[in-house]
Image (cartoon, rainbow, N blue to C red; front, side, top):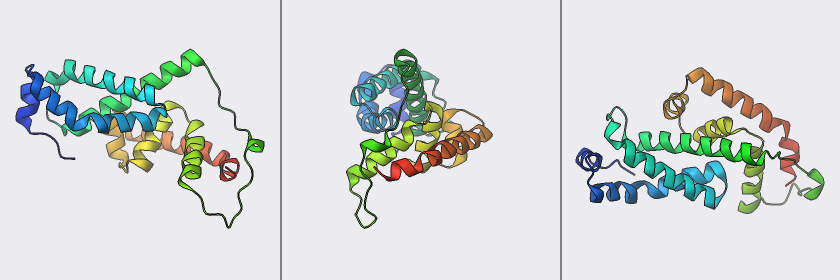
Length: 181
């Protein structure tokens, strides 16, 4: 997905609704997919997508072309999703418990299905806080470098390293239970 031309971005920043609609059409699926990966909930991902484009509409005139538009939108999406996840977590104040007895042990010769793989990934990600989850998703699922993650989340590269280290430690601590899903 290539960035749109600078002219379209500048037109949208000046209030051209058609130009902003082009930006929306170009990036809405991308924003939604990133939000869905972070939040694992369709309605929450839709709400975050809406919030991202409202923010984008209000702040587009501040875009300085120091990075690509896609990177800037990605940063807004990740920050919005992280903040949304924290808000939901505070409101619900829920804890995630893993019940190893609920799932039968898988046979080593059994081929893992896509559904099983997704359950395992979800279980691993569920033990992470939103900041750690964002770093893991950007690194492992999106393939960003540590520098790109730091830039996207607007944090220090050492913070990226420590969040990933703690996230890996948490995921390793439940690895055995997850392998039985």
